[in-house]
Amino acid sequence: MTYDKITIELTNYKKEFWNGMMKGIKGNYEDLKGGNIGNEMYVLPYDSNKKYNDLINNECVFRKIATNIKVNDSDHTIFVSDSDDTAEWKPIDSEDIKNVVDDFIKKRMGSHALSIITRMDEDIIHDSHFDTEDYLVKHFAKSFGKAEENAFINGTGVNMPIGILNDTNGAEVGVTSTKLTFNDVIALYFSLKPEYRIKGSWLINDEIAKTLYTLKDSDDNYIWNHNSNTIMGRPVYVTNSMSSTGKAIAFGDFSYYWITIRMPISARAINELFCGNQQVGYLAKEYLDGMLIRTDAIKVLQLN
Image 1 (spheres, rainbow, N blue to C red):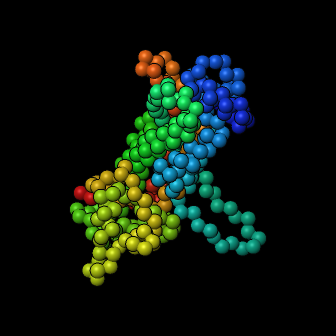
Image 2: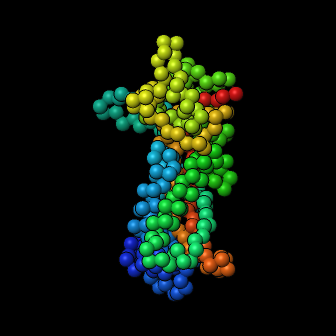
Image 3: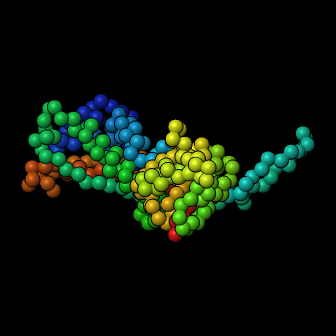
């Protein structure tokens, strides 16, 4: 699936996309052909897609803390080092080069389709005061952001990304406990290598956040810095895609979770399905994948 990047930046493309096709008005739409990726799906105009990306970064925590990579291939192979390569001192005239080819493993990342169908009343769509673009872009970002975040955490890898809590390819368990204590959190922090701790972040849900916010040591010191909203000097992110039991706290360098975004979001109007209700339907899709490249970059606290 390809599209013309220049076409989607044109004013006529945006005009026909939002004022024609997405209002359920039938037509040939010659100016949209460069954005057709098949099955009558059209990529969002450049400005609309930029707005979408800004919005989804606020809806999905992982878009902020992970590494986002834009790719054109449906199947993208990523090479990462699986060893702790170290620099070595050598004589000035030395030509000795370490062979590190065998130290690399392949991580294969493809793309999965995330889709949504929504609908709106025709009289609202055709109201000159109603901003269809603004409403739908915000709606798509909110819906996709929620689904993305859950997949990046709990995804099975079957028709979806592999989440950080995946038992096989997810983060390693650093601490196991039956009741969350001050010392458990400290132990989780130090279970991570220093090079990951320095850029580490905490990922928890609301229930765990409430517990940690009031957690103290024997000297009455809070583990949560209430002024900077940090734990051990590292930022805290809250998402209810995390659980209060099982793998309840994740800490580490989330930049080692890679998100591959295949192309801009695409959409089309569905006229026939909802016409009996005097409504227009909208199908939107995005193609992406996600995977933790270094499983030791994040550790989790297991509550049994």
